[in-house]
Length: 283
Image 1 (tube, helix red, strand yellow):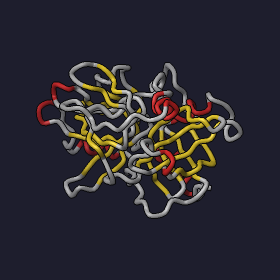
Image 2 (spheres, one colour):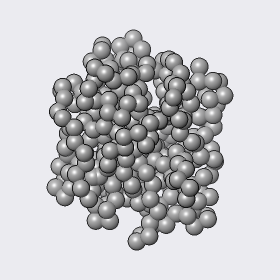
Image 3 (tube, one colour):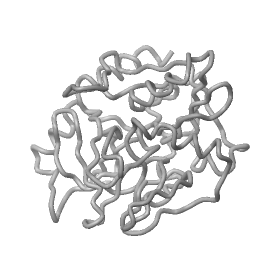
């Protein structure tokens, strides 16, 4: 995450392998939490997706528990994992819901992933809709962690129609959660130390056909995502404090300072894809 008004919380340096775990998806995934604060246990259903090749850590994204065996992430995180080799022969994928899974890897509780499911229409290229949404099916059910709440179809569209989404001085804010690296501000330099789970507030800019466009502008004290946060959730909070998962961190500029683009979960094609799998019981 990037802390825009202050430096994000740092943790001690650890083995290079875990350093690589956080950074290796940076070429194609968007972003890391930038200007964030430690999330601790406010979002225990947000986990670190770790990718291992022949037992060595090689990549990471962020993901969210939406059913006892089903975790939501970005399809490009799954695609990137498969670039390291065949799954599950050469590539192992695991998810940890620990608040800090990187500073003490020996004690990290990893959940094995038995199946990787990108959206069947996923395509990262010149297209207006890349369907950047995917599911991780866990080998065993997760107990004791509350599930993230999914939106109804058209949730964000309805908020906009109701005048609940505003930009500018009185802009609406969304909560972004992830494990990504930190960007120090005002110097546009990355702090490459892996981070525990963090959260940050991003200001609303616009609602597009498939994207929720959010501000990461330091001048307006907005934070946002950076390398390692891809696949992580964007939450809308209602006046009672209830959160709904409305977006998936997808892409942004390579410097993590311009607006971020988050794939909408409230689309019919997103929810149909998710619920088709949930109706199968996640097996």
